[in-house]
Amino acid sequence: MNYKLNIIGTHSANSAFESIYVPFVSFANEEQKKLIENYIFLQIDKFFEKIYPTGVIRSQLSYSKLITEEDFKKVRIAYFYNNLFHDLERDSDGKLKLKIKWSITFDDKCTPIQLVNVPPSYRGYKHKVNDFSDKDTQGRPHRKYGTIEINGKPVFYYIYFTLQEILDVAKQKSI
Image (cartoon, rainbow, N blue to C red):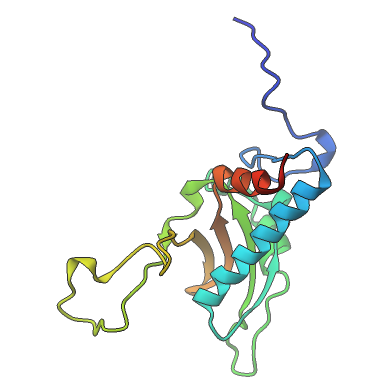
């Protein structure tokens, strides 16, 4: 069978994606693009506020530079230096300064960690079944994530988004 559905496209040769496993998502107009990007940045801010309540220096790794767990088997070590480690600095004590990079991913395998809510009454012993929740106070699931670390310190965060959540945002202003 030789069917052409014209549903799935391929990256153009000049788009220079680092991984063949990272999908390219496209929408019909600039309004949808801005709406989705604003949503993503808002969600990223909320995510980092939960993990680093006092703040942290962070920057986005270009989506086209993202790699997946499958790429770890093939990518040259230079990739990590050129994209993740090139601007790391040490403080006067010789400890790494947190300069975190992040990117979104649609790959569930890159994001094995999920935050949980712990009630204020929890004291660390004799927990009950419902003491921990993978949902926030409004009942929404916490965002999944994964990290690349140096000496136990995250230097890169994969932050999971679903295609459905992106579509839902696009549909808010469509029509």
